[in-house]
Image 1 (cartoon, rainbow, N blue to C red):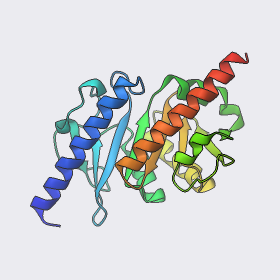
Image 2: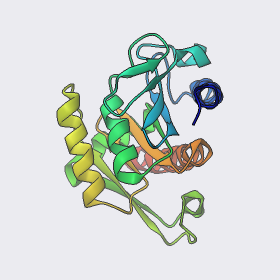
Image 3: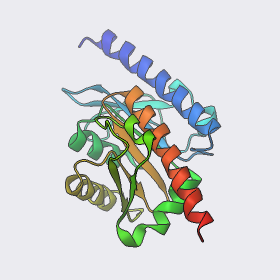
Length: 212
């Protein structure tokens, strides 16, 4: 890939991630500076477009997106990549994801805490499950592992890798009292997964809270 082609692809990807960030902010899923998003620009060598740290997602612009390599070194843009960059790299590496999106919704926080002792949350019987890649029936049971949050990103990335290996069919995971991570073969698929899973988390969350 030539430098000019690579720059054009990165610029288009950055704009798409910025649009998604603003849209998710409008849904209340990434308020303030919460949440982070990434997308693969190149596989060989790995080049990842990822949100810069500490940026208000309601004001997210293309110039808030950085390009990094497999070692999280910034190659394009200014600023620091998201503190959770190692988690994105883990998902890209183990799931061969083309995009990774992370939200901080109310329902993901409530349910990740409520079901932490069980190690995860199972969701089944809902028609919306068919919006997940490869799922063709509402009878599918989706398992969302809950991972204990940590400020030690190296240790947290290892925990994420362990969960991804243990549950190879899961489309997402939850960080306890933190939020939802999901991915897709490209940005469009990852965005669809966020929308599907946030809907299902809200349904389950309202049922959980109403039953208490």
